Amino acid sequence: MKSFHEKVAAITGAGSGIGRQLAYQLVTAGAEVALSDVDEVGLAQTAARCRELGARRVSESRVDVADRNAVYAWADRVVHDHERVNLIFNNAGVALGSTLEGVSYEDFEWIMSINFWGVVYGTKAFLPHLRAAGEGHVINISSIFGIIAVAGNGTYNATKFAVRGFTEALRQELEISGAPVSATSVHPGGIKTNIAKAARFDQSVADLVGDVDASRARFERMFITEAETAAKVILGAVRRNARRVLVGPDARVIDALQRLLPSAYQRLTISMAKRQARIKKPG
Ligand SMILES: NC(=O)c1ccc[n+]([C@@H]2O[C@H](COP(=O)([O-])OP(=O)(O)OC[C@H]3O[C@@H](n4cnc5c(N)ncnc54)[C@H](O)[C@@H]3O)[C@@H](O)[C@H]2O)c1
Image (cartoon, rainbow, N blue to C red; front, side, top):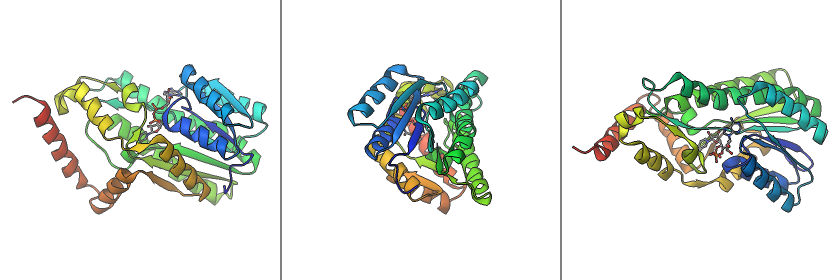
């Protein structure tokens, strides 16, 4: 898709961070936007700014991406309100700090239901509409943690590796069938958003790498790229129909490290975690 002018773009998790910036830039590029989030306050703020930016048409819906029926109903509503839909950005996501041994099934299912099943529902609910529009693109937000795994992030890793596999297979199926729809897997490094503040952390992380607050703060210090820049990179990747896009210099370095040391990179992440644990734990 070379241009977003007069296209209709649906975005999940549009009330904050990367989703919000995608909305602003799509509006500026002449697209209509269909916004959704569970956070109605953030959603209303994004929608209001889109209107100030001169959006052709904006619709907003409270949609929990973990609710399959709600996602399908929203897809139908978007087509009803905007007459068509060309792009779905499956962007809504959450983070969870825990060990795999210590994590509760409740928390594990919570993150899977949003980060993985939310992407699946968004893709499958919108695909028939994207095909019907004659030109479409599915953009699924994975992470650099969908390329390497890191202790304390195992559930997040599981969701984001799954999104990558799902999206890469989808892209191949769309090409084989000659569909007028494409797909891109997005792998951001640390982006300055609300994700760490909204994350769940459980006590099992403290046993691994020191206390939970320090762990959250450390997580946030790794965020070096502005959400605005991330959105720009993602939209550039859609324009050139990239299969995969890395977002931020940290993502590019980590991806190179994984290629160089496909499994031995784990020795580095282990020694970093041990060093942090020594710093954080007295004695
Ligand atoms: N920020 C980073 O460093 C980073 C790095 C790699 C990948 N990502 C991914 O980018 C995506 C966007 O995250 P962000 O960094 O902008 O975070 P963010 O917290 O600023 O925004 C995420 C949005 O998703 C919404 N959301 C959460 N649960 C939802 C649900 N069940 N249904 C609908 N909406 C829901 C939140 O309300 C929020 O508005 C996520 O998939 C995240 O995993 C972020």
